[in-house]
Length: 305
Image 1: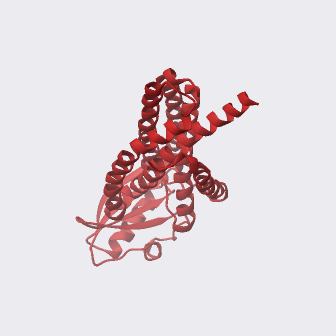
Image 2: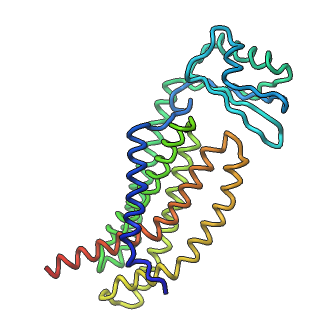
């Protein structure tokens, strides 16, 4: 049996390093928000496979040029090449200039979509996204505290919930930090799919944590002993380790092709999921359960003192 729980200090150092780097990246650079959150226009054009359209070549064709927020992204799929043109301007005259510029470079170009999001809608989306994440975390805390009320000895069920929420916060912060870095160095924007990915990460990560916690509950109720609680937790981890890793690997194997070949529209969603699932599996094993044991040891020292 692997002695996992006794090496929790290394997990704390590893997690602390990633969380620290993520918080610094978020504080310094923030997230590069897409038009879902700042408002603006997005157009998609199907273009000839032999044609390459960049921001520079397109802006040269637009009368009056274009602003710094103007972006052009190419995407290649089995259906051919397409480009996504995004900018904060929502003036119909400018939209027609963009359309004329694209067809001026590639006469065969076809406009597939044209979306506009106003500033009011964008503000509401940001507010609703924050509320959804906060509500999910609070609901998870309350559910775990209720579900594990039968094993409130030697550690209160509330501490199981708090430890799980800390692990979830760890996963979310690291994922957001990764996109703060990608936004700064690679201009990677985030939109509503990114928020959907964060909520999915919360659900996936807590599922792994619940599996481990449930095995701890079974073993505590089976042994009816709290003298060797740390051993019981370590045994529970070993009994669920293979299941957690195998389940996560099947998801990761699917997500990698989505990141590589899913195109621009799926990139932020699939990459956020890939990062979140990997760290969610890690935190369920090495953070959530380690915190429960750390709390147990602190309480034990207080009682002995």
